Image 1: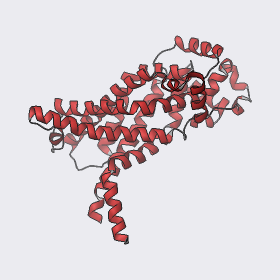
Image 2 (image 1 turned 90 degrees about the horizontal axis):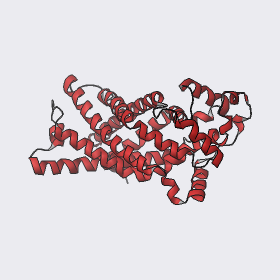
Image 3 (image 1 turned 180 degrees about the vertical axis):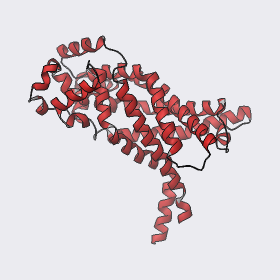
Amino acid sequence: MSSKSWVAERSRLLKKYRTQVASAVSTVCAYLAVTPLENLKTRMQTHNFKNLLACAQYIWRTEGIRGYTAGCLPPLMSVTFVRVTNFSTYQAAKYAISEEFEKHTGISPLRYYNQPGSTPTVGTIVTFAGAGMAAGLAASPIACPFELAKNVVQTSVLLSHRSQASPDAVRDPNLRSMPRIGTFQAFKRIINRHGFLGLYTGYHLHALRDTVGTGLYFGIYETVKQVIVKEFGPQQSPFGPPMVAGALCGTVPWILTYSLDTRKTRAQSILLGKSKEIGEASTAVASSSMYKGLSVSLLRTSIQNMILLSMFEYMKLKINQLEDDV
């Protein structure tokens, strides 16, 4: 195959799978960028730290740098696969919903949305939110076991040494060297103790959170992006509207579904504790707010979605231009 033919074939494949390629690459970059904040969020939800600073100091003094990166690399492949499933399902669902809407009303929400100067309508909002709900529900069976394992890994040191999760614990030099279970160890222990269905502990909360949250996520993202383009014009940086819309579509749904996420995380993180430690952990967080860790979570999701969606849109734009370069 000649060099020109190879380039043409590569461009054809990239254009055919541009949603999958763009979502995979942008997910990896966004996920790695906010891993330390994700670790802080999980600990704040599952243990009764006074505030974010106290949590960050505790992690540094007892676990060192590994505490901020725990559960990072092993789940990265699963997170990427889940996000690709999200975007792929969303793309297919929004066209299906738009076509169905057009059959009954004679108006295509997607064609109207792509017209210069268009404004949000009930049709466009329902199309994007409905497609987002379908995407969230479709990805939840894949995401739940891996998110459960991540939560268990991130809190394993705290839970295994629950009695040492106190102000005096930071003076113990041995805590940094205490072993942390890995992702595959977490899977194995959960299955051994609770069976295969143990991997779906808290699934009803996970599915509800992802269905509602993803519907709001895409509905807000597309609507805000449409308003920004209308007000400021289409001739602007590809990073502008997606970054602003990404920040909003990440924070608003997260505020509304955060209590569900906290309940899910607490149920999942104590799966591998000893009976006495599970009781102590449950008692410690029972009286704490369901919105513990919300501030760091909002910061995390804002940064993550600004990176994710701006890179996603930029990569799709560049891939669409490849055919003209061949």
